[in-house]
Image (cartoon, rainbow, N blue to C red; front, side):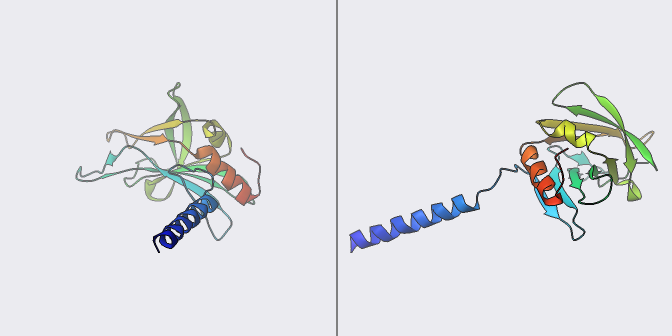
Length: 172
């Protein structure tokens, strides 16, 4: 009886191990990839740091989202989702640092209610494909100070590959 039970346990362990291997896909790190009904595919990642809300009682992590569209231009874009609004209405200067290199200033569009910052085009995505870390910095307003979001990009190249495949488009 003990021999039969041992065989059942071994068979169950092998079945479980096989199921885990079958489910293994590319390592996307902390990236979450989603597809919308309109065919748009996104990959989102929370910042490793927290921003304190206006009242100072709560903190939140900004979310970086990369998106591709199967049709139309621009095909690729990146967004930064905030809980606190920036005071700019159309454009904002974003300081970008990739892998601890020098800061580059870019113009990003300000989305609805000032809580979404957007940059269109594949050049922003290209700079990130082989990167490990991204630091974004911006001003909330003239007197309201700066915001900063720090992202560990592990799994990004796999996420972008999955997005490009789903969008049936070339890698940026």
